[in-house]
Length: 253
Image (cartoon, rainbow, N blue to C red; front, side, top):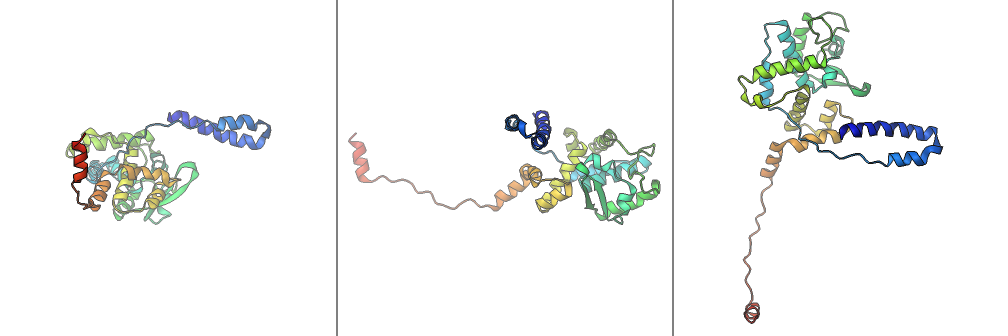
């Protein structure tokens, strides 16, 4: 259904343009634009607990170059909530232009945003810079050929870290962890920390806050806290007592 809706959205965009260029075709265009989007089941957002996320961040081997890169890559991915397409295009200049306290991300539709970094992430990145090339366009997270990592490369390194972390954090054994899972985790942890949903939308680069509302629906713990805060009504139940006239009427039936 999602593929169908995506194709229909593309057709609608073209027909909106065609309507301004060819007014004579408006009757046909209006018929096509009236076709509704198909509804589809939206699964609940999957995310990791803080313990699970921390176990994954600590899993890469810090004694090797690739392990150091993976640990900093995953920490930055969690800190920023970046899409995998955004994290693989980050350059050295995107960190240095913000003096190491934030990261400049290039998002979907050529939209850019700046995401603040925790002191921990900032420190790791500053220590990482001497390990890569000094050129401003140098990929911040290169592969072994000093080229930008690929989507599949990031996903593979994350799966490897999750597999290693599952040895000590057994709850990870039953979970499929992807870069998008880390993005969802960032959003959920910000929400649980009390960050306003509009700020989370800006943090993740969502064009509409409606997209961010899915995290409100997924957080069961917040719903449980809300339920605990809402005390049940203390209305006493009154036992019904029929009048003598009603009893006499029923006896006479």
